[in-house]
Image (cartoon, rainbow, N blue to C red; front, side, top):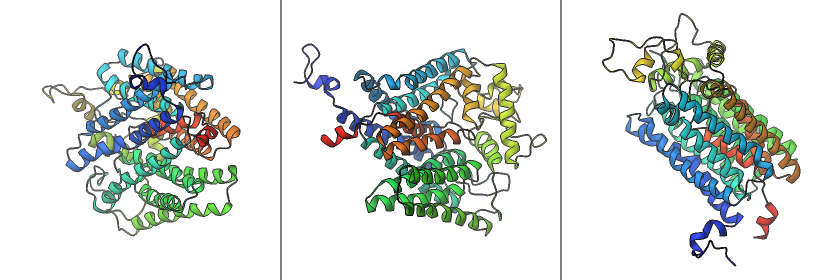
Length: 476
């Protein structure tokens, strides 16, 4: 007999009567929405050419609200068991501490809603928490398959725009990465080549793992073709993240094949990644793309000049007297060193979410603007930056060390619990989630959170610790 609350109807008590299978179907819909919503919303500013990237936040909000409802249902249904208490409580602490940081910051509005063009205030980070909890409450394997296909679909959508940007330089803010340096860098629908590199790195991993897992011929073809496309476009992010993401995906595929005891012939899939990657480099060296004749990394120019300074005015440009912008190692070292100094001066609460530039501002440009905005002030402070490309440092600097510690605890819990789940069930999809969680954690050492990548990361981490009941699914 269906459960009822007092004298209400059965339909109005759908939550009480929802089965694990129904919940997983609803969660799968939320997962697909989270994979695509931000990228789909970004099409509008890209095509219209006004670069009003705040529109992209609408996509994140739609998916976040849906997953918030799904997460609440999961909590009501008590799908968060004792085994999930550590990561879920750590997530709760991270969010609460983040809001405290936002309220104590110089600009609470930015702390809540995020800097214009970035949009990673506490509202968005709360949505990330909902993605994580909604995914962790899943009990059916179909949701894991849904995520892999969602990652592939999102990656291909990004690559459609990425290929246009590479070969035409249109629909892009990154055709020029210097006053006379045309590289036609790809950003897809991820707003920056750096963020696209992270998206494509995890997409390559999903494609290679999917190729090893799925048995149907159409699925295998989709995975191998997707891996080749992702690898090719990733070359044109001209970033260390692009190289590392591709390499980690290949390593993850190799580890998976041996750990899951799959046929060694599946290792041939690695060729679908290596050949397109090398081909992309050769195209650049042949002068077929942009006006450069030798492939190299342009992390500094992209993240400091083309992205934060030129695209959204969230920082000043680099100071060429103090840093060699074409020395990738020096760029990352400088960002990390300066961020550590910021952390040391505000260990507990940080600068406030999305407000890393605020303590770096040394002039307000009095007399330059009548009523200066934050963006007006940011761009005249040379040598400043609004993102450090190490998410662990970024979290500590903006939301305080306690919040960063909670983030690390969530990640470590996801890895440990994912490993235990795999040992217990030997479920190949669980192993895939574990490997992609580890991949993401390593990418965060040289990359940072973004609305393009983070929804996918939190879904992966959540599904990695989910207690999949495969036997019950087969019965139903």
